[in-house]
Amino acid sequence: MKTITKWIIGASTLACGVLAYKHYDHVKIQRLCKQTLANACQCVEEYENIVGTWIDMHAQMHSEYGLVFVGGVTTSSHTYDFIADARHAQIIVFDKQVRV
Image (cartoon, rainbow, N blue to C red):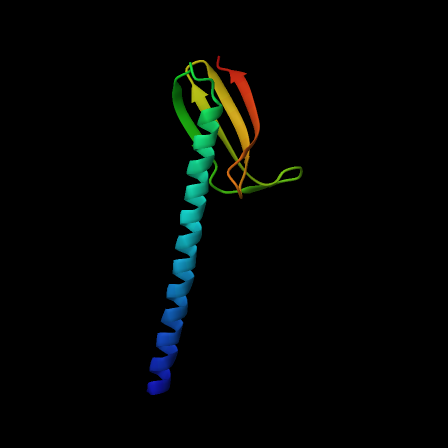
């Protein structure tokens, strides 16, 4: 009986550790995404009103830039697409397009 109890406690401790790490990882990704969007909003020309922002929270592998986030900033007259470094939240490519 004591052996079974030890196994159950050990398994539940391991499960709690895995869940805690996953939560930490998720919070870290959220923080990087918020910082990336803040950096992207600073790249927009100041006379434009920002209507919306979006970012793909799943980092993607890019052949030239490594691990990146892809997202965009929408204003009343333009749409800005960007590629950002997923490790440091720095904007790598910022592309301006006219909204039609």
